[in-house]
Amino acid sequence: MSGRPRFATSLTELARRFPLLRPFVDRVQVDAAAFLPLVAQARTIGALGLFFRGRDRFTREERETYMALAGVLAQALQRAILFDQEREFATGLQESMLPRHIPRFEGAEIAVRYHSAWSGREVGGDWYDVVALPQDRVGLVIGDVQGHDTHAAAVMGQLRIALRAYAAEGHPPSTVLARGSRFLAELDTERFATCAYAEVDLAAGTVRTARAGHLGPLVRHTDGRTGWPNVRGGMPLGLATVMDLHEFPEARIDLVPGETLVFCTDGLVEERGLDITIGMQALAEAVHHGPDRAEDLADHLAEALWERWGSNDDVALLILRRAPDPGTTHAPRVHQYVHQADPEGLADARAALRQALSGWGLAALADDVELAAGELLVNVLLHTEGGAVLTLEVLPEPVRRVRLSVQDRSSVWPRRRSPGEAATSGRGLLMIEALATRWGVEPRGDGKAVWCEFTPADTDAAPAADTLTPVIS
Image (cartoon, rainbow, N blue to C red; front, side, top):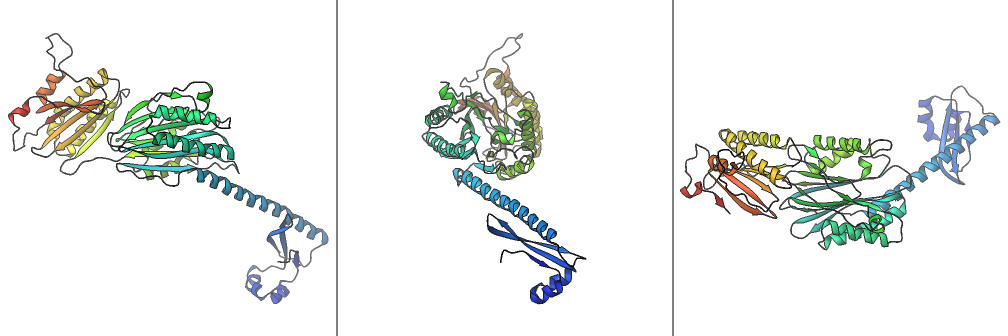
């Protein structure tokens, strides 16, 4: 390419000089053409072709106008190329700070997503991390360093590594965040960071979580309901140390098989000029209607919300779904968590039990099981400080029977009482004894589980005599 403009007033002559152009000349049926180099900063970055009908010459003024137009287009094209290069640099820097691989865990599905804001070379400090911990536990970290520049990304990279180290040492969430705050305050920076950390016991389903100025997790239950657990928060990392406020209260969440935790940064739920609760409601609705698998849910949220909320800010998304536990065809099983503050939880639990028993061909037991479940659940919700994990399963051996189990966090075991005729309470265990074949209590972690079993009337083998009395395990 010579870098000089060419003006052709006879395309027939042009086609004779350049035979490869003949098919195109015959097709477009034009009379004249101007071929102009696109030059920016003394470098040719492309070319522009203008074609005309009914023209047999170019005046000097027209040639100068077309060359000026080519100059303007060259500058615009160069700016677009530079923007793409800067954007690629910024996103590459940000992605290099995030973990390259997410570990796999038996008993859980984990999905992560990161979305960069379209703001030129600016790069944010949003991040996520997943830490493998001993004893079938996993640490989940998500956060956002203040600012949108390379310094924010650099601080994020250092803070992410520090929090990973504190988590791997086995510290509880409150300590991980407190040490992270001191680490950030000791860096040569005036930035602060919001963060949430959760330690998940995949075997027991226990989640211990704390947050530092960040959104807490959204939970989707097995029946599709969603809710934001009450997780008290502390000050953002760095700022908490400056103000000498290192309290990061922990909250406990019981995650039953099939339930999902969703963590995100504020870019997914916040839009300038709107209340953040609008975005939180939109996220809860999208999770409620989303698919079950973690990867599919992450894709669904990206498609549903990033166009609406995440275009002006970076977004980090972290999803953990505890593997469902349906049992087997011969021994099916369902789980459900009943939150203490959920007024509809009891009704939903009763409906789920009746539906499960009907599907298993055991609808004849539904009334007794539902009544016993209501009694055990109400006892937990009234007399303990947390919710209840309800499990209903079929035990095929040695005698086919249905077991109902209600687990809570209290270490106080139930005891049989002898209420008088005028008493309005105290008959719960007497009712369980009358309804169930047998019942018992067994320790579970830092709490207990009260269980009772029901034998279908058409069961061939009768229960042994000693199984008609309560069994305290």
